[in-house]
Length: 398
Image (cartoon, rainbow, N blue to C red; front, side):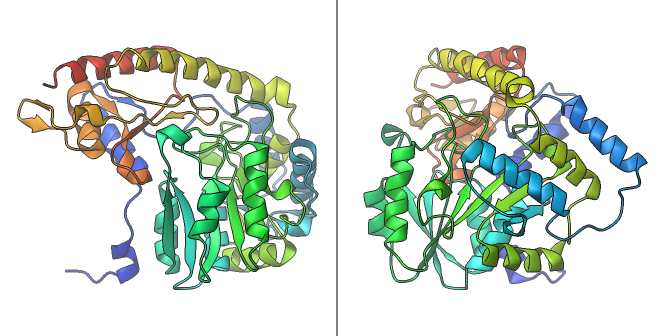
């Protein structure tokens, strides 16, 4: 048996990636699979961004850059934060990484020591807990419910803080639930954070522009919070650039310098060509390039919401952002078809893959196996067919 480190044995494979891989394998074998597992826009990268990347190649912009990204890009990111979020950053407070996932990894590894406690509202994005495992941290889970729209309160947060608490990590808009924290809710959370010395927040805001309830609210906007928050963003979702791998961390200078040091040992800078593409993305007109995609996602959300209502036993909130539904499916627990019994969301995901040929992700990946998650970042025909297949397959369960 080959030797592997304990740390890699301890972490789990991303279940979103695992389900996407399984659906690709089934497709390759000739089965017509509709995959709703990955959070990946089906739009193509805007032509103006692709043209910027092509020009960078032709201009031989192919050498190492500063680990945190070339300075003009970081200055453009600062302008974006001022324009969109009314946040004042300097280039020295920005670190460009190979995707928001690396930005989060950098922040975790720079803020957390072994044995530190990190508060994580559940449901949570799949990689949060695995990154904490790698850092040797202890996750403190605050469970939320459908009835609270999957959001924690300031009182719940306060109750969970101990002398060992070092970091809080969460997303808004949220993956997997689509929940969006209001300005007042974030203000109350910021008041709790500021009442505890040496407590920091990793605020994952990658879905900032896929928001259906008004302007995005950043946690770092409140007085005193900019020094306490690592704001995570990137270009994958709003700009349809998942494969380009461009992430952003904005935070106090001391944290940005630490992340630069950490990243310098892992990857150095992200691709110089991706950086040029990101630079153009930061300067795009929202109404012309981003809002049409956001509006399409909203239309799809409303379509899927109506289709879900036709499926007995599915209970869901109305997502206010991102592009996921996270229905509660315990109505089907104990029901069977062809000798297969549904006991949890993991069983349900496998059942729907095998019988309906629709790939989803079990809620266990996000902290609650009473749920399943599926993305509506695909075309309306696919969504109609997927929901029909799911409904037909669920009707077979008795």
